[in-house]
Picture (tube, rainbow, N blue to C red):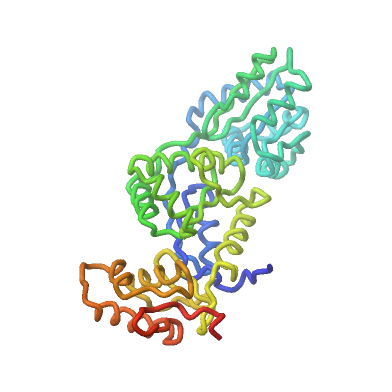
Length: 373
């Protein structure tokens, strides 16, 4: 199915973006499709952990260039060049690397290299360090000097494996994941997610996903998230399989695009949350129940939280009849007066159309699904 990306097909949805890097870009793309986006970065980025040490290692590489350079992230490689440029030997470094075999961990690392005028000899399309280790160990590294630019989580076994196979290594740490810039915001986001306040939670890095779930674990909310996902009230989305690993380890089946790109992730969310298969066809149009709102043909309707609770019950089995007592059970408060349920339905009809909810005499109410026509 083709979805017109210009239409606000995500209208009424509430989404959480847990990224720091490129968070504004991702949030903006979702907002242009109508989503309400909250950003709560689960990790921060600490640049230039030891700039003096990085520069000293760089000078050693200029004096004795490595046989192989492993570039694990685009942002890390650009940060390395920026540091060298600020110290007056950026051009010299690029020239030296032009004579070195370069291995890149994924398309983003390749893009950063190409922007500097360098061409990697090999790219790990799976974006995993394990694929790089497998390649180098298969080719043999005994006696080789390998420089490794690490990603934010630090060494993930590359240097250990290479040294074990006889290589000498140089460590290049440009940035490292640190505490979130706003821990209170991350804590609130976890609580809102557990309470069913988001339609989707979006992850762009494996360490970021792990850090966010640690906060959820602290609130004892993982089981609640499983229930929301099973009820199709929550979507967990990851930019790629590496990012998805912490979610899979906790028993979730996240939404993952075929290509590990933010644009592909946005398109996947548009299709998943905006397609007609997620809607209930009623006489008034395509009805969608979001985490905190209701839409008809992608237009947000003035439905109160009480009305949303009633609609959510009626939508459990569209077309099935629910009694006034069942409606009262999901309404706020402890009223047992049938008139309370009748008034809630009347207000709901005003919001979504009188023909959307049918009265079944002496039995209760049901959604008027498309078959009724």
